[in-house]
Image 1 (tube, rainbow, N blue to C red):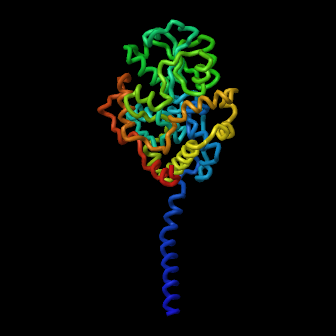
Image 2 (cartoon, one colour):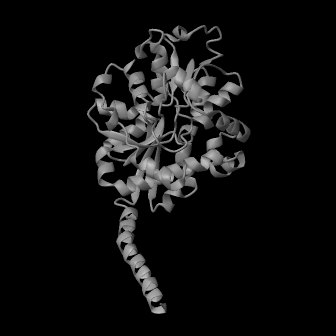
Image 3 (tube, rainbow, N blue to C red):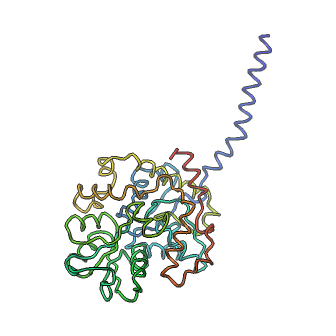
Length: 348
């Protein structure tokens, strides 16, 4: 009996080793990155809109996945989009609706991990230059500051104006960025209204320098404006990049979902210690107050909601004549394949 037990034990051990020999090469293949060095373009990295990207970078989550990531920061999302379309960046950290605009121009770009489940964009009117403001129609002929022309802040403004019969040509759009330049443009009277993100908006709001007329920093506010769940910041890339570099795309999604999970439980001191001081615009307390306002808008798990793409297409087509809703293939705008695997791995 003793020998029989030893034989069974040895057989079990050999079977386990055999199984390991079959599994381990597969595991190694999954972690072998086709492109370890990746360039990411982003439009206004200091904004909360891109906070998950900053956290992944600052906490070394990209490096933990074997990635050497170079992040290029542009003045707005439209500039970052141009970089990835032009080939100077592999991936863009930008607005989901850019995938719609690109598809309408026969450019097959796909979102593969979500950063924001609401756009976080706020439209505010200057209390200095428009003290008697009564409604959006009052903005005809006025100057509106956006992060950059063509960015998501521009999109939200266009959507709002279209609701009162105004077109983009009825106002003047000025790119003001997402930090000190945006503050000075509003305060100096260079612009009459602003469509921007936090922490800039909270700074202007707390000092009574703007009157908020639309707010998508909460799920409720976003759904009231867009009529459904509106996917916002995401990582997107050309379909060919995702096809040729699936392990690299998975590594990027892993780092981002790990960042999203960290943000779910991060306290004020964690945020202050992790985010570069220059992003806080010289006021930690106000920066944290702004974080409290946008926290709900941050994606929990990187997965694009099922109805989100339809909402985004409907919103964009409502004011952009180049986007024909019936010609957009929703399934080609995004993939949840990578985010779902990362969600399972990190229990997000």
